[in-house]
Structure formats: structure tokens, C-alpha cells
Length: 80
Image 1: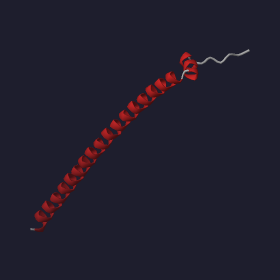
Image 2: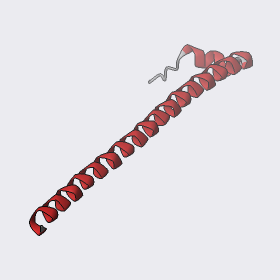
Image 3: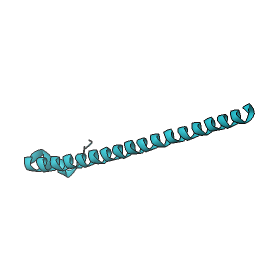
Image 4: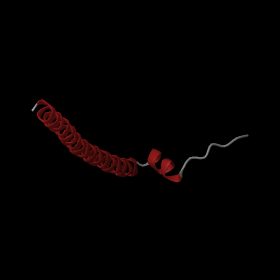
């Protein structure tokens, strides 16, 4: 014969409504804390993405400016 063991708080929770309410409140608070941490992490990732995008755009502008100025210098040198 097999026995299914459940944690002791489950037995109390099944028989005592007040214990059930208190444990449910603790679970809800723990879940809210986890959700808050995930939201904060997502905000951090979003902020980092914005910074990376600005850095990328700045790099592309810098490279294109360098190429354009080199082309102008070559054209002026060999055209004159």
C-alpha cells in the first residue's frame, strides 16, 4: 500500500480557513515580489537596448562620415 505524503501546512490549510487565508496572502506577496523583480529586469533590459541603439546609430554615422570625407578628399586630389 502506497501513501501519499503532503506537507504539514497543507493539512492545516485544508482544515483551518484562517491558516488558508494567511498562507494565501504570503503566496500572493511572494508572487507580487517576483513580478516586481521581473518588471524591474525588463525595464533594465529596455534601457540597455535604447543605449545600444544610440551607440549603434552613432557608430554608423561616424563610419559614413569617414567614408564620405575620404571620397571627397580623393575626388578633390585627383580632380584638381
